[in-house]
Length: 169
Image (cartoon, rainbow, N blue to C red):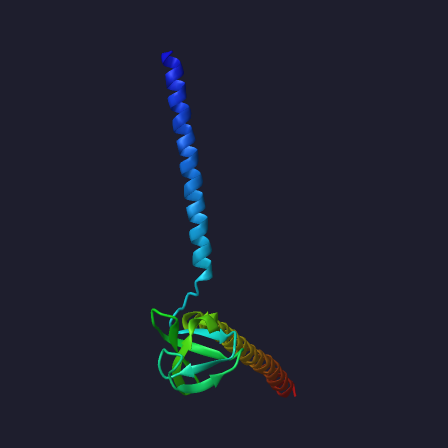
């Protein structure tokens, strides 16, 4: 009898644990879906417009239009308001655009890292080119030295032969 009670208690605990794990799984998956739907804005990042929209003076539909923006235009987000708007700049103009009109394409740090990487590549290529030029110059110098030494040896040999020929005559 006692053993039967223990088994029922273990079974009850296992059922409760299974329900808890399933509940946590359902809550976790629904929170991920919600997070995926929310547009995340990063300041100092470049965004592409996914629809025609207007850049406005203030974060309001009724605010004065600063500039007409066309789908596909690229803007840089310079500030973010907690609502549905963010401050963007395009060329020399700055204004507000609704967040739902933006699609991220990259941020300044990523682009700077990419440019620095390209710059480092060019720097290493430049250093390799300088090293090749140094090697070429050194080959030419040593080649010239060897030619001068060979000519000097022949010259000494010729001078010796001429002296010997004079002494014999």
